[in-house]
Length: 489
Ligand SMILES: Cc1cc2nc3c(=O)[nH]c(=O)nc-3n(C[C@H](O)[C@H](O)[C@H](O)COP(=O)(O)OP(=O)(O)OC[C@H]3O[C@@H](n4cnc5c(N)ncnc54)[C@H](O)[C@@H]3O)c2cc1C
Ligand SMILES: NC(=O)c1ccc[n+]([C@@H]2O[C@H](COP(=O)([O-])OP(=O)(O)OC[C@H]3O[C@@H](n4cnc5c(N)ncnc54)[C@H](O)[C@@H]3O)[C@@H](O)[C@H]2O)c1
Image (cartoon, rainbow, N blue to C red; front, side):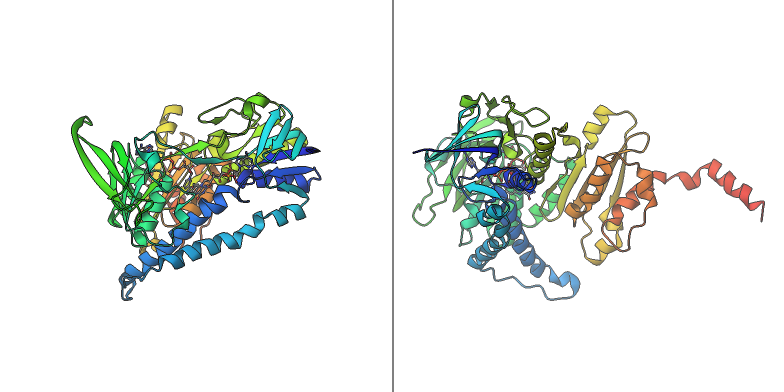
């Protein structure tokens, strides 16, 4: 017999977005049902941010051992025990997992049902096993995204890796080919290279193309110097099974069309044999099986359509995080969750503001951004100025031998900060302050006037801000004022 449950809020998906809504709503005394068909914690904890950052951290350690001679310590080629690296990654997941567990959420007062949910009609969701039917005052869809399936001939015939499987490897890939040079492809390419794999990135256009090319050039240069073969503007003709399927179950032969200098196919082909093929070429929203049509919820291949208050075409239902197809980051799913809580519980006007959302790519050096980039700023505003400060002029960067990179600040004609980008050591930490500055529409004067402890990497921001006044000491008017005051002794 089907169990009928009536609740205040039903959340579908227990990842970054869904967990935040569920915990906050329960804290305010709402009755909350949380449905999860896979692992609690979603992509970020199990197949995304957490394992990738743990793998990157392992790669950084190996890199530091190779580069120790810069500090007067003998460099050594590290002995990477890939299986132990796997254990490290999963120990990190294990350390964080209790925060996202069923037990924790039940203790917060959330009823967790470990089943997929599907809309039966506009106000009812049924679990995949058909045992439970939930009617709720409000629903929140937070079902995330999955690695996009590429329309490449032969790809479906090979057992390629995605973000859901790559962190399960216990042996180092000998020859790893990654399709896609976005943040996933580039972060993992560098980490795997530093852990000893031979890595090639195949990118149809340009790598890290969502960032300012002046900044991404610094990252690309370092990843190339680490030994990753980055191939941009490639055309993959087809994929075939590897020569030895038993030894290399995740392997493949990738056949590229040879292109002329102007990008035309010449009829020639080039074959790359990979012991491991990883596809990281964008994301598809998890909309399948949700029964969205039954609930009159509009969606397309980019995701569920939401208004700026995150309501879907069914006003009882919100959608948040990756499934909405906007900026796909954990902190965005969390931001969406906060907006939905304001709207659902307090009937407050909640509106997503994408202009204040920062992001970080965790390559080494890191690259971060918030607000408008130079191109967008010049399109929208007149009299835009750019302030830069290089890491090479920062004493801490010199001490730590991390002198590659720069900060770039974009300001309007009145000095209001429109955006900031950082590439270099700790760029992900440095952008925090700039996120506050951009979200509060602060003026560059405020940044020039605060005291930054010496020696810190963050000083680069203040130095860039001070450069706004670069010509001030030479101005005749200022010189005249100083001379005038001298008359008084
Ligand atoms: C390799 C990689 C690295 C990343 N690194 C970063 C990073 O460093 N920083 C960052 O901000 N972002 C990063 N991201 C992106 C980040 O993981 C996502 O933006 C974030 O997880 C989205 O949260 P979400 O709640 O929308 O979805 P998810 O966290 O994916 O959660 C969705 C949940 O819904 C469940 N679900 C799906 N369908 C149903 C259904 N019908 N019924 C019940 N449950 C369902 C899924 O099983 C899943 O658990 C990374 C992603 C990847 C793949
Ligand atoms: N540090 C972080 O915050 C972080 C890290 C990883 C992922 N993410 C999130 O996950 C999202 C997805 O990352 P992603 O790297 O998969 O996607 P992406 O869309 O950013 O990059 C995918 C790349 O694959 C290329 N591509 C597509 N089809 C191809 C083909 N047939 N052949 C060769 N190249 C092809 C595209 O041109 C693009 O450059 C990111 O946009 C980001 O929101 C965030």
